[in-house]
Image (cartoon, rainbow, N blue to C red; front, top):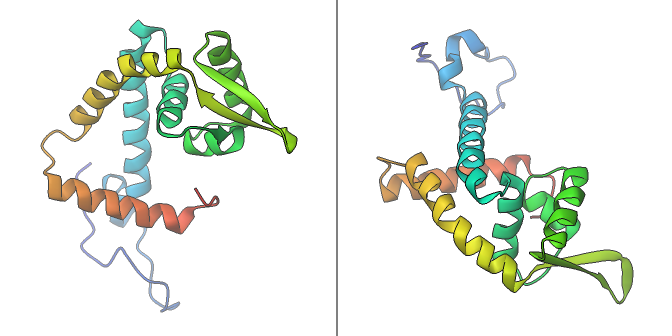
Length: 168
């Protein structure tokens, strides 16, 4: 699948009469949403395999990673940051709390809201996860120069701003 479209893929939409390129003209391997999904799926599969030896799921890793950076965060915020559905998040937090890796505390001013924080045991668990996480990251960007990486991240932030539904 080496198709390439040499026309203008990135149209600003101001000219409603301008013909849009077809997916066939662009080519699946040059259509960014397809590539993003393919990369994310492969990365998640690789991560799941790498974490299996520690008995940690990808969702567990995401929760511990986010909590290692925040002293306390709500369950809803955690679901957004970890890109996890609420039902999966609830089950994951139940398991992590049972293992003593996190704690959930109701807010005194609103008992419906629970703040989640990482425990000392959770931080120790994440210290074992971080080398695996970083190695997967390093492999993902093997051959990419620092300047290219920073430009890529800036582009991803712009794309995220374009589609964001949450402030975070």
